[in-house]
Length: 398
Ligand code: PHB
Image (cartoon, rainbow, N blue to C red; front, side):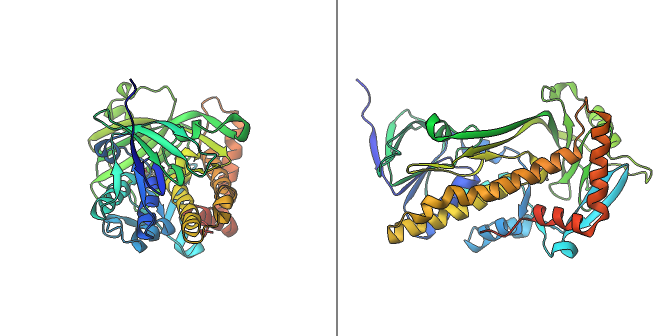
């Protein structure tokens, strides 16, 4: 006989306990709105999953204003610009001077650690190692989902609203019927080879390099640990890359007449990150709402992934707060359209940065030169620089 499910009643059932799900849960609890977070992975796995590290000032404020005592202010590194490097030359952009804004370099896994600690401190109901197997009745006012915990016990969550915050392979997203959904996607003919190295910083700001050998990004983690990426084939095998080979590949992509060279050190992590642009429309169905990567994915070139997820959280949190305090579903009904406006701006920016900085291996020489013309246009014009700076540091939240 099938196991009887244990019933858990709550207001908001959140599927996915990454930064987006936890941030939403944290804001809801602060407003006295009961919620449960169900996450498939364990805490340790998420803490060790390396993702992009740039936070817009607004994302930092969402953490600090809501009392996530984190280390974002003490351990995060404020950056007031980036360096666009092409034709072997550096083109620094000063965000503070251009648009009076900065970003903070603070790794996404650290954001997760801080949020998980804040939820634990506030006795939030966050369950790791639990697999959601079914979502039911989202077209009614009593949506439900079922999950099994690590011991195999079956639970059924009865909520007023369900949120899919379960990442780019979202189970929640897959439950939307074909008749209501539309997907938009782009796949790219390249990926990023990412490394972590024990080395000092090579330059004060992040370097985004376009070179005839392909793109490279020189990012950072701390005074002694650096994060770097270079464009590679999506099927590249990390085991084929010795440290020497990685360093010579990275160095040739940032080389120039100025003699710039990277500061090297032992490499302790190597991963290939595939990337794509994806949007699901709409971001809601009945009483189920998608946030973050569950609803949309951007390539990492514009560093928008987590920032976009937090912008979704802000819009959805305000809509839920209004729903539970007034009973009006007006803002909830507008969630998808409002969130998607920013999503498409970020899609455009990420696609633009990606295509301007990467040269596909079989690139038409005209297209490769055209991208250099675009970089020259942007960096030689104050308006061009401001356009990039404003997008990179983040448009105001709605
Ligand atoms: C990173 O530090 O991991 C990082 C920074 C900027 C990006 C992407 C990734 O655009």
